[in-house]
Length: 81
Image (tube, one colour):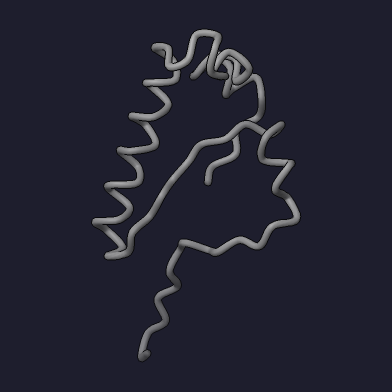
């Protein structure tokens, strides 16, 4: 997950509130967000050999999950191991 501040997220993908079903969902900015997430998921999955489900989120939503456990995706390469 990549957490963007609310202003940056809004500039890239529009207001999150507009994505709710019954308003303008899925709209062009939601589709851009979905394509961006899918591209990063695919490239990261190929590079790592693991299935990666990548998402970009804005701070308002990400803070709701701040107490949840997280898994580090980066791999540390130690010579000799």
